[in-house]
Length: 220
Image 1 (spheres, one colour):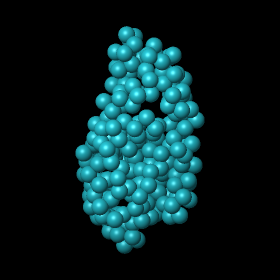
Image 2 (tube, helix red, strand yellow):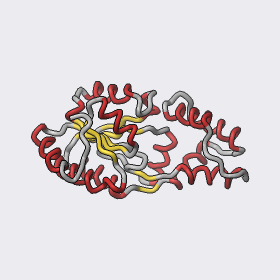
Image 3 (tube, one colour):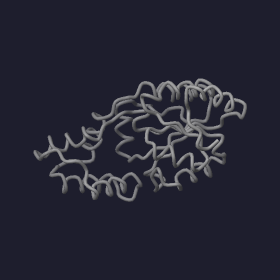
């Protein structure tokens, strides 16, 4: 049911319910679920490469970041913007290499991802992400997404979470109901929006790893 939260008293009941209903689809976020990163480290890299102080993204920077993650501008245009605004002299390859250095694999999330794939479940990603992020992940771990049923990526969809359209698009594309999906994401606003769309959703943060693992163990 939409809006259901996991908890020590509710995990087993939810898992049993999902088994009886025949879980159809599992959706994984990528950032801070399958791979970890911290934006603070990106700001440090900008400063180190430019010789300028460490400065977080401005509102305009975030708007441009959202555009590249929605495919409204290309990676080349994003690099050009970063070079102009941050005093950098990067090429697209530098952007990929920087993110390859920033990403580390989340061993818990990746294990759940592989276990779900190997179980024969329909497994997808649903992520706010740009092409250079995907290139960086493949650079670090070739075949990282092998075996997944499909990838829902914001830069290919033209919309980012938590906009309701992204969840509606996924359900329509897959031809499934929200009750037949489990969505795992680290951000509360994305979890809330998914539940509003009728999707079963669990927040993937360290203090909730055990609950998510228990739920996954019941359904795969």
